[in-house]
Length: 266
Image: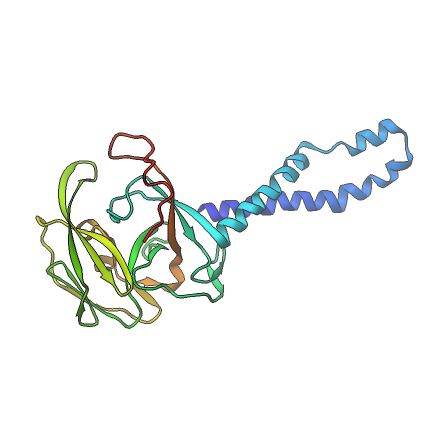
């Protein structure tokens, strides 16, 4: 059971208890108004279940609305988006930028903008929708995507890259890797990517179907993305990542990474 469903269930239960108390118990207090003070005091005393429901209902309602329609927090669990996002980053995702969707059933009810090339997008993994993935949008509907010799081509044009330097990291906490870091340009978007010079790749070619998106991790040789499992349906989109609100430095054995807190995601 996902958190959205748990939150919705809690909202219905607490709201239902509050509503029943207002419609059923409150009217029963009226005859006690004319009775003695001791009887009136006893009648007015709320059951503990009603008391807790009334206290938690507005809080749950606020969290539910914020998380479902405005912004949702996520944690980065892997290094597939290095160097842009690191393991231990806690991010915020804009839930309404790609359209307002009904929670639980994830049906879009209000159109907004569409994902753009270069967006860092959070979505439900097409082969197991209980898992959330975060990748960068590379291919839009109708695009032809080619990846050969670690170079990205979109509709026949090679995407421009510029060498930045070396980027050392620990792969799955076990193997030390020194990757080549590049600045890549996807249309109007600029971001850094990593390539491991010691890892071979095979040439790939894809055509993105309508209503779908092709996504890749910035850590190109260590990302499980559209090159291996296919396209992201529009209905699986959750939102666009835009802000790092907290970061725990996992690679250095723990501790708050103050330099990353407050950074925007590009």
